[in-house]
Image 1 (cartoon, rainbow, N blue to C red):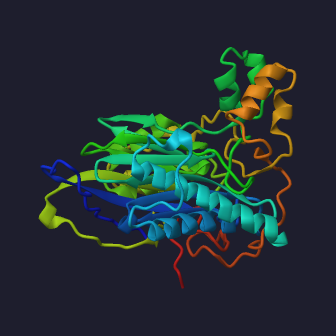
Image 2 (cartoon, one colour):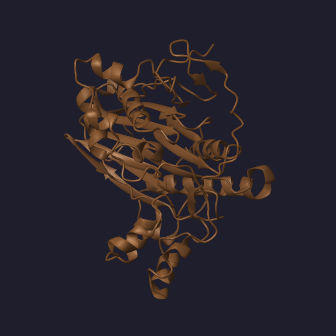
Length: 399
């Protein structure tokens, strides 16, 4: 269930005038078109660590990859609580703050763990996971990501995407910004070029940003960002300041827009607190709480009109949030569009060879295909993994 975590500010050379506390709330939901949830959401205030992982590889492996990603990161932070890393960072990370080095090392460890299980256990062959993780050191927020799970920052009424999706289109544009509309149209929008578990080593993008009182950070899987626009996300914070309710609204909006994939949202807000009020309320938890009301009910309860933009999805590509699966040669999409020199540059730089993913229309049957019950309000079929009725929004009781 949802929880709020209060994080103490770590020691610094200059004593702080006040203490920043981070309050977190999150929700993961199976969505409207899937019958099992392969996303995993983790909050670990004892390590100032927050994670969203989106598993891939089918109904028998995706949830294993995402859960293993979170568990591996948590274990790594536990093993390095003294601040000593097991090995020296790569040359391009030696100038990073120690906390950022620790985070990227943890993500690489998670990649090795997922790869090892994927390559040694037949039943988990081909599994992978995207990840976006943040770690707060008391002053800076460090953000690491692989794949297309995102981190946004909401500050002073504006929203900014802080991470760049590792997608085929983004990688191609990074090398050749002048791709024509026709060339871009030939590229699939739902192919990602990096994920954990595809190779023994993975390139991790990391950045460090200062934190201001009032900042809210949203970590989410593409089941959310692929279904609703940035301005729709921002409008949620005009409706409520409660983080748990904001997560519920975001999930409900993504479901209203189609809910074609699992949906995860984790919100972390920086608040001011005097040192005397600082405490740890939760050590570690997976954040997941069923919606108690539908989107319409939540908005109507506040005396506001239902947003038409949510009821009429204006998504550019309805396949954007479809579950991804491996493709052997992601560069094949770019042949004939980019020169051999550009392809070589792309493969050597941004693109992790052999780590491409694309949507599959032939998903294997779900292990959760059998309905477990029917909704008491509308009679709609309910499946294992549903957090609430996908037809009317009624909360599903654990019993």
